[in-house]
Image (cartoon, rainbow, N blue to C red; front, side, top):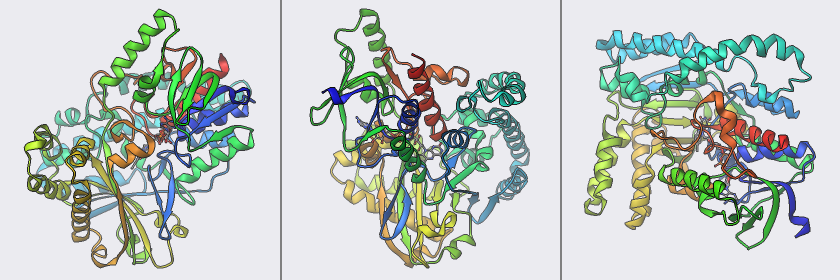
Length: 531
Ligand SMILES: Cc1cc2nc3c(=O)[nH]c(=O)nc-3n(C[C@H](O)[C@H](O)[C@H](O)COP(=O)(O)OP(=O)(O)OC[C@H]3O[C@@H](n4cnc5c(N)ncnc54)[C@H](O)[C@@H]3O)c2cc1C
């Protein structure tokens, strides 16, 4: 046991756990990062199949004033390229290359919805307003990654002048915390237009987060060699600074009073501090609180009941394709990160009431009804299409193209179909429909050119990273969020009712993605070091 005693144990080798580990190992702590899969990275990962390299989770990375400052702080040189975005509806496609692209977006919407000029102008006015807030929010490098004691120029010339603007902006942002659907409903009466603007966001996404995407489109970058290079760089830094990483090891029990975690082979590891950087429902389910004070136990039970009542947010279905067609054919159509909607009609209630209706009485629903619904869902949906080779041509065999097509998908649909025993039949039905919609609209070369094809469902995500309901950005946006969701108190997001246990990652703060997962990883490491 003596060689299994650590200052800090970090569970979960996704981007949050990697961040926490690297910052602790750099400070000379004896740390152990435990990851259940063979490789680290979680949803920030890349893999190769049939000579094509794909990204398993996030398709490109948003700096958000967090990631590049962290890399510079850690002395990591990562070769990156811009990952420009295109937006398309039916035959209209625009490239988002600068703030001026907003004008092209207005023209595109005006062409498709000629009767809604006033509403479109209002949408654009609101996007511009929110872009100004974003300029303030991400206007300086995040101070969490700066050494304020030594970097006096940053402290006096950047941070202090920025703080009053930040405080005013946070107030404005908090007032935009309502669901995007309700927010747009106030000034966009055309339901199709409303859908087209918002349907590729998670249900009830806070308006500020959704409307800020026009700024974020300009912020995306892509590590040469794939998104997974970011995780790999952090992993290498951990090893370089003496940290220990144990993969293929799943934690199945936390004994809070004894400060022990146990893995699937019943091996125990002792910690002074634990950072849980994985699914929080799992943490609360597998933690034993016997021996802790009554006060802590009560707080723990209270937090546990809130967590278990809530759900993970929307998941995704992803289709990976290898195509016998050169990158150039695709480059002519759109950038390598493309949000495409084949129909201007919008999903309406297809993915909400209509789907809820099918799911609520699933046992009585015929397969044919599901497939008919699927026809409509795939025709009206918005797709996130990523072509890694357009960002780094070395990621594909010469003359060929790898494509990743994904869209938001309801976990319960896949879970119920699996339970009913026809998931293996359903997946090709879904893949075929997506292929047919995309090849009939934007990429006709997919009709005959496919040489490799496979997909990940929300159930695959749940299996791979152990995330409740296959969620990819933590909690669903519900009324009573079980974790911190205000930026000005984000440092509290890493605390749990048990003083020796901290939490980090997509489940610790809402809304979260890669930048917030990294930020909470760093905040958790800072708290451990402060103690
Ligand atoms: C298709 C897709 C698109 C996305 N797009 C964006 C985007 O545009 N912008 C953005 O910011 N974010 C995006 N995201 C979300 C982003 O990738 C995640 O929010 C972020 O990577 C989460 O990091 P994490 O470290 O918190 O969690 P994870 O990546 O889930 O890592 C958790 C790790 O813990 C491990 N683990 C779980 N349970 C245990 C256990 N019991 N014992 C040991 N190990 C365990 C898992 O295997 C995993 O490696 C996207 C995700 C996907 C899938």
